Amino acid sequence: MSNVTRAPGSTDSQPNRTSEAPISPADTALAHLRGRALQANRGVPLNLDWVEDVRVNTSAVERRAQTLVTRRTVKKDWQAAWLLRAISCMDLTTLSGDDTDERVRRLCAKGRQPIQHELVKTLGVESLDIKVAAVCVYHVFVETARRALEGSGIRVAAVSTGFPAGLSPLAERVDEIRRSVEAGADEIDVVITRAHVFAAKWQALYDEIASFKHACGPSHMKVILGTGDLLTLRNVARASVVAMMAGADFIKTSTGKEPVNATLPVSLVMTRAIREYANQTGFAVGFKPAGGIRTAKQSLEWLALMKDELGPGWLKSDLFRFGASGMLADIERQLEHHATGRYSADYRHPIA
Image (tube, rainbow, N blue to C red; front, side, top):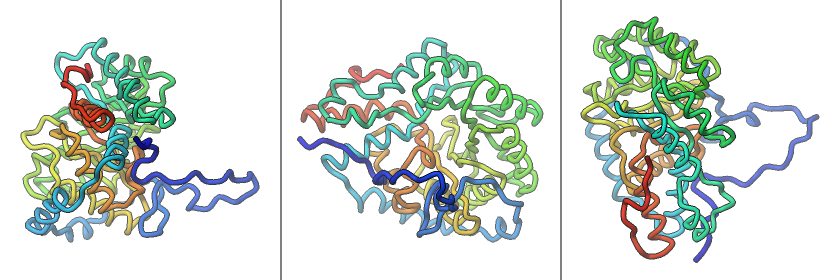
């Protein structure tokens, strides 16, 4: 069997740069879109005309989203490579009321070695050092996760700002961010006040997210829109634009606690908002679908969406994450089938 050595969007290594060579914007680019070098998002002043001009053709979005599950397939080694890429873009998550330090430590161990060692050898991918991008936990478990992941390169993400409702007083939400950063969180997943979207209070939403960004300091901020609560795709698009203007490093679909979480139509609207923002500002913003993504097949659908809408530059953990846990077991089962021709039982791939 051929070794799986590359995943979608990978590029050849670049030659070493001499210390004397000048650094151009392209050298520090987070991504490229249509040949343009894009930098990490620094935010821009709120542009109400831009927000009010946002329009979404819902029927067209739904038709386009449907084609994602019918027009593109990947098989054999290519499918295995895409599934490995999905693992490397995963925020392995536990956000349950019965979480414990021991469960978080087990989850971190799974993040360090998401695929059984024997399967890694069979696939011939030892050199890829496959691991998840981050482990996402409540604030109280940040230190536990940080200790368990020390030296792994896996980031610690903390949900914050009154997760999942986001309705506690603003000062308390900002303080919660600061405490998570002080505890060692590399990334903060914040929740917006959905009522600001319903009332079209864009300045209030912008100011809220900007205050979260300031409190995050060096930590990356993922802004959870709670799309299942926002009622219309136009609301989703407008909230996405405001969040990016306010400095979001990522925009994220859901908390995972809403009745409806990540869907392909919502994700299409958000990725196109990211593309428009990049074209207008020169800044790259990441995307994180979360909630309801449980199968390997679904991971391929979202990877195809990212490649089609934003290009290979977004097929990396710097700009794309899955908020999932259950999906990992199914991906591991599919990889084992690819390697051996046999499907294994779910219990052979426990997470926590």
